[in-house]
Amino acid sequence: MQVGAFEVVEPLPALERPTVVLALQPWIDVGSVGTMALAFLEEAWGAQHLAQLSRPGLFYDFTRYRPNLYRRGDRREVSVPNTFVRYCHAQERDWLLVHALEPHSHGEDYVESLVELMARVGAGRYCLIGSYYGPVPHTRPLVVTGSATEPALLERMRRAGVRESRYEGPTTILTLATEQARGRGIEALSLLVQVPAYAQLERDYRGLVELLQALERVLEVELPLQRLWQEAERQYASLDEQVRRDPRLRGWVEDLERAYDQEAASQGAPEPPPLSPELERLLEDIERRWEGPSPPEPGP
Image 1: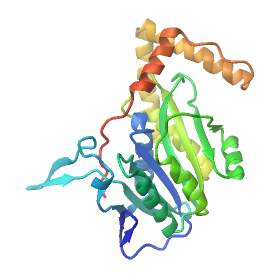
Image 2: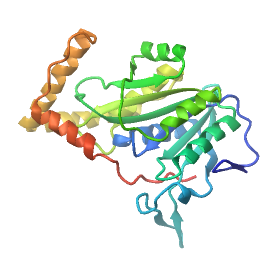
Image 3: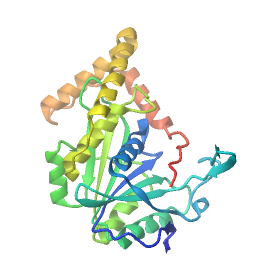
Image 4: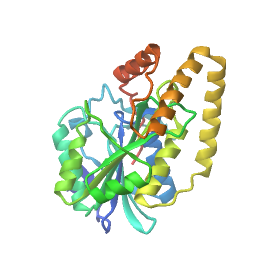
């Protein structure tokens, strides 16, 4: 069954106003936080394959997202980069979980097909999740920012401790999905966690846990996070040791702590103290250079 550019399983499962949770690679997936969060939900909730792009080469440059050659028994097989959609019933409601790769071409068609699929299954809510590098120290609670199309949902996010995003600048073509979803009667929101830029972790478990906690509070679900918390504490304890051994890194962290604490205490009144010029250059360089790795492919 074809829905826009997506090949969908038949018969189409009967879903009641599912919530769509989408993680986007590589644009807002530093530390693989969004990808890991979606994989966690899929495993916890027993998600099943629903759809994928029928011709992913229309949207992706395979010299940038490389196909993967692997063996299955005596056979050699190729996994082609794609956007994968899974569905499940959990927490007394239906869900669509979307591993999205940012398109290199025909972005408008990609977005229209994605929103058409949401509308076809009767989605009631669309939530973009992810992570980006920010001026936050690993010694403090990470900052989750977000936005929402509905005032009531935005107020719920504020009560959950999510800061309203004021970002202006370069973005992804999937930003169009928010407005198109709203035009179809689907409320939309985003939840993005800031992770420490100086850490450069391939898998940031603290970012993962704090994003999932925000998801719990905003979408009103319960998730088993104890094991992830243990991994996050182990990982950031290792960061503590690196900071202890490196005077320059220790100075950066102290700068970030002062700025973080003053901003929290002032509740946005006076400006926080400036960061050191060296740390400012580091953060700017990371923001300028980071494009993300060629993403691993989740199978259907």
